[in-house]
Length: 86
Image (cartoon, rainbow, N blue to C red):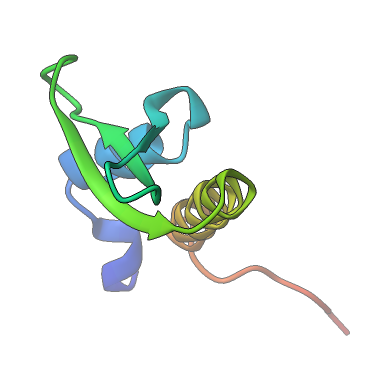
């Protein structure tokens, strides 16, 4: 086994949490920019800022990109994927 498959269960839980779009929100800042934030795993009223974008569409795209990134990390934890056998 490699280190990727031996991750701490808390890390796995965190990755799954931030890979769930329902744990994200977009807020508009005073300067007009949109900030993406994800909810804390244990404290529902605590949010962490992640990115700032000029448009609402850009902010949602950033969230979607982050979710895709975290889902790939979760998939990688399963170890190498066989793509071809002979």
